[in-house]
Amino acid sequence: MAHIAIIGGGLSGLTAALRLAERHQVTVFEASDRLGGQIWTDRTDGFVIERGAEGFVARSAAVPALADAVGMADELIEQSQVTSYGYDGSLQALAPGEAARFLGFQVPAGDLGKGIRTFRDGMGSLIDALGHRVGDNATIHLDTTVDGVDASADGVRLRVGDGGVDADAAIVATTSAAAGRLLHPVLGDSSHPLAAAPMLSSVTVELGYDRGSVPHPLDGTGIVVAEGLQEHGMRACAFTSAKFAGRAPDTSAAIRVFFRPDPDDLGGLDDAGWQARGEAALSRLLGITDAPRRTWITRWADALPVFNETFRSDVAALEETLSASHIALAGAAFHGPGIDAAIRSGEQAAARWA
Image (cartoon, helix red, strand yellow):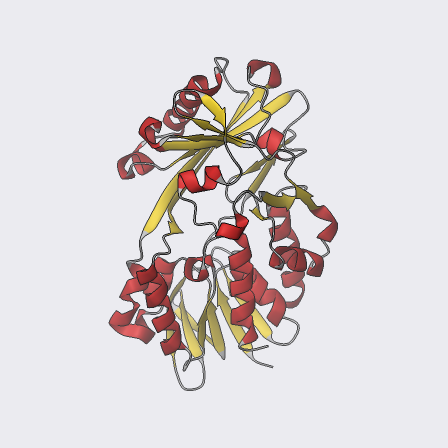
């Protein structure tokens, strides 16, 4: 039985831990105070609010298989609506797949227009189930930062606090920037492409209204905004409570506004400022003038990797170098965007020591 250290308690790290923990000693190190990474569901006053990913591509086989492995196969649900709207001064229905193309989402052509799926109680319920199942057979450390990884012929040593943790192997399931810092002792300057990888930031403003305050019928998935009209980087909104069942109380509506923020605004604008921008956007698009009942503001700084050919090539070269070591990379940060890719990446990393 080997000791496998997994750095990062997001979906990829937990998937790898699940696959390995029944055969090996597994320790998961997560720097934050919760598991899940960019999957984070808030459940408050009858609202089910996604602070991160809201779902996964409908054709995914990896997500249902993982859900089945943790006893959640019956919790999968489909979109309630499939029509999207575009805004170029007025609202108009879009053809299937046009919204993703319009926003430049990195979605395979076969997924365009197919929509997404999720879990009845939010994507965070998958993380809850994974955390419980992994915790039965592995050790999970929250609020624990790994500062570096050193490699030897026999295994790895993780720098943790003032000491270290020895393991036979390590899976790095972090952001690309964090991986670049962690692996610098092993890769030297060749780790630079990870640390310098192009990244995008986002801010989401979710607003919960009394249903009577929203004059639009919300008979679709949401709205994408033409590039020239994206005030303050506001690119789209999702009709959360219409898109999936059970996302808001019957007398309420939940709408999620997506911003691609200016770097100065990302850190400099407070929650009240972002709420005001969200309300202004929905006033412009949907004619809402009443104040919301609830608001959720979520910032994701440098969280979305840009998968251009240069970055893909850099990752492939680094993985070739790491193949001679006891270290693997896992996560959508390295192997393609989205929930499906994150799971498949975690399983691929685990397969090295299965």
